[in-house]
Length: 123
Image (cartoon, rainbow, N blue to C red; front, side):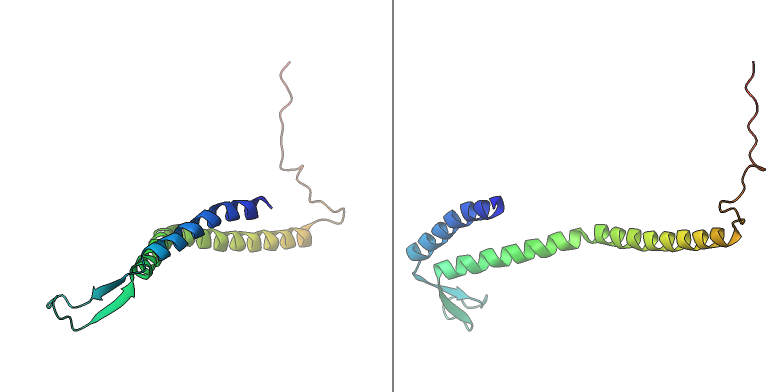
């Protein structure tokens, strides 16, 4: 519920800003992709100014997302390695438990008393 409220609280003013920007900047802008002849470009596109600004904003978000994703690759790699290591260790623990059950005496728990020596307290 709170998440929806916060989303509406952020998205509603953002939508108002974008709509007012689109209404105020409807004039066409020529985008020239020919760096050699500015007067008569071989490749040019005429778009409304708000569409150009929106396209630049979307491109910036995509480039920023890709950059962040690439920066975090070492953490994803470390997480995959830790997950692999945990699976290997769990398999080893399971194997050792299975071996200890097979070696256990008839009473259930293995006898460790013969190897354990605790000296008496000094009086």
